[in-house]
Image 1 (cartoon, rainbow, N blue to C red):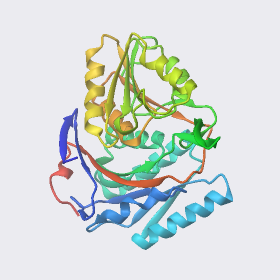
Image 2: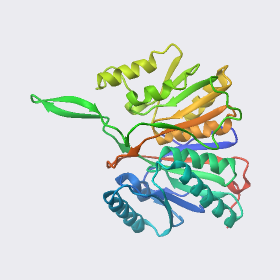
Image 3: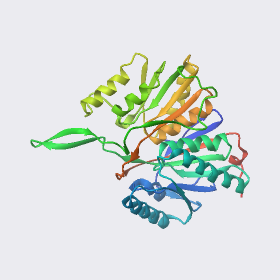
Image 4: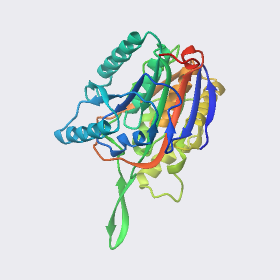
Length: 351
């Protein structure tokens, strides 16, 4: 994927694959990452070069001593890569409202200390989607951010668990990617429509791999039009192994008379953002709901689209808890830049 660029509303969005020898394209005020049990948490940092700030790390409260130990190992790896300036301690990641308040206060303080919008480099690999969406909305709605440059390491997930029956592999069931328990929906602050009109909404969904959980979640909205975005590299097809219950749930989604579908690369933020904008503008409904259930790059796209569309809400799912499975990096990485086109800080060098 070569460097591509698009103007979406008041933002410029650029994307390219992150490869070895990457050099910082600008001077950053903050360099943010999250402590995690996933080994991909530090993967992008090994490819970053240039004059970069010390790390400011986000740490969610751990649910067990085992997870705490893994996060300590993650911190030790970060320390080998660059100095750590601060660690922001938050409650467990499922306590989103309390954590949103703390995050907003933290970024507001840094904005006020600097006296201008911030230039931020953030690793979104291990930041839950709800927080990623919130930061995009907060930063560009409150004018705290001049730019938010994101790096992301794609993770290796096993969607299907198998075992051997009579010497042959047999599908047992879908493996939850990182979540446990029932999903609850969360409307993301700062990514809300100018007017909320329940019962008059189209729906665009960035899909993941858990169709059985997604179907009832989507059916709550009862949209006038439904647009489903799948990750191209893992998009469902007739020849892909799948539990019958998952296949039935997928059929329930894709066979609806009001449903359309698009498959986009995991690292293609721009195409997904443009599709969301065009889908919203093409419909007669007074509102559009964008639902982020899949990858973080596609969630990022929905956030950017919402900031340009006054009638678009963004919601995501928050699970009962997260399961501490190690997600290893595949080696594919993304560098995506979100820039306020009208902020002079992006065109001049400031101390």
